[in-house]
Amino acid sequence: MTVLICASTGQSIALVEQIASSGEGTVWKTDRNGYLAKIYHSSHHERVKKLEVMVANPPKEPNSHLNHISFAWPQELLTDRNGSVLGFLMQEIKDARELLDVYNPQRRKMLKLEVNWKFLYTTALNIASFIQLIHDKGYVLGDIKPQNILVNNRALPSIIDTDSFQVCHPNTGEVYRCLVGTEGFTPVELLEKDFHITDQTEVHDRFRLAVIVYLLLFGAEPFKGKWVEEGDSPAPSELIRQGFWPYAPNSLIQPGPLTIPLDIVHPEIQRCFLRCFNDGHTEPHLRPTAREWKKALEVAIADLTECDQITNHYYSKSYGKCYWCDRAAQVGLDIFPGVPKVKIQPTATVPPSQSKVFAADNVPELLKQKGKTITVVGRAFSTIDNIQNHHQSFSINFDNPTSSSCKDGSFRIVISGQGLDKLAQIQGIKPEELKTWNRQFIKITGLLDIYQAKKRCFTQVTLEDPAQLELLAEPAFKRLLEQAFNEPTFQTKPIKAAPNQPPATAKTAQTTNNLLFETENQEISLCRQGRVHARQRNYWAAIQCYDQALLLKRDYGIAYYYRGIAHQRVGNQLKATKDFLEAERLGV
Figure 1 (spheres, one colour):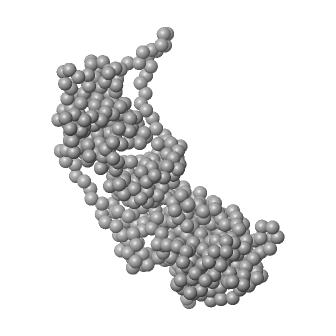
Figure 2 (cartoon, helix red, strand yellow):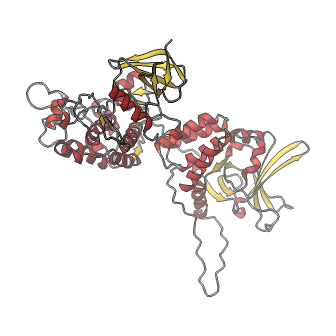
Figure 3 (cartoon, one colour):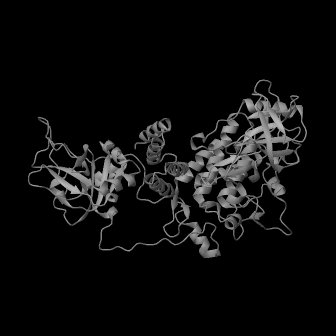
């Protein structure tokens, strides 16, 4: 077993198992968990200086909060016992596939990968994000190709082979060049250039990034299509030289019968492609930067909507209809196969989402609802945990029963016996933690047993099924409360006007939060899955679901809120606090 030395720490690193080999060197598993070693076949002074700069100046990791590694970056130089640098140590990228497996429909089908268009958009956005960070540090990728980008099942990409990047010494300005390139990813101005003597810039990377984004969104190379002249279509490099792609003026390449049209993507994305491949063909500086791609992709993702016919279909609202359904009908191919959505026929029973909503303090109307399926929402004023004759009960008060007048009364939910344990199990907490629900927003739905005893100043509901109770985030509570205000049977107390002023007009609560609980989008589904895991006390699985939801919708405040609770349950108060603060910032 070969043992090497970390140059900065002097620690020993053992090479355990070779896992890859190339003309440049070999990659090894090491005895340090989560780390690999790249060992070169031969050592060069310039390469060592390049690695020293990279070790000292890594780019910022954009997804550390998701426990993800975006860059297989040189962490430590590895030497032999004589001090000669033989290679470097880097973090291992686990549970990820090459980009080709993700964007290519045939590969996805063969590997049985469940990928949709939104996943591919998100992957493209994350690639643009980390390329922006690389450029911000002054690096040029040089050899961007699908084999060097790995993607996990959360649409989080990682880039490998980073030691091939072009590096500029921050003090001396010396440039350590990228010596390799890949056909189809090399811009016109670099074709037939000798990379050993050519300094590259991020402008060249802009072309490569556009090709990667095109591959993800359309599943094929941009410089490919139906050749309209005689003979065979030229090689990709020649098409790039001529600027021939299906949407260039006077192009000899036209869309083929299976070409996915450009107009199905958001107009911002269309403009980026046209700027890169048309305008940028003669004026490279006009190509969109990684930052511009990031902004355009964010806009496009926000414009995606779920098809109401087939699961796994997403399309741009700006396009107006589901292209994937049309394509499947016209050419018999569905690259995002799903199943028809079941349309639920209405029944005599009113589903919870359609039941009338009442505020918990609207006692007069609540008493009229016996035998009806309704939804009641309120904010807990207090909780009471009682032990009476060895029979445990738990009460949630929505007003102060000692201060309410018996005329109007207050509202109370009572859960007792095994129902109390079931409620705690559903919520993923211990029974004694229920008493911390003061000031929580609560909803109960169903056929409720509502009654008011003659000698009591409160209306009581004994909840037989704790699954009828749900905690709400404030925006969802406000929306439901607004429905309660809009019910024609809702009774409001008049607001006393100030002297010489007209009576005040009652206003309902408004919310600026843009969460759409009524739309079963993927991020909402992930959040629901997370809550199921949390109720089963599988908090780490819950956190992973919330992570994925936030990857798809970065401003999804409710996911931050529930992830904060999950972090709290596993004892990570620091992360919990950060999530709660972010949820509050987003209006949750």
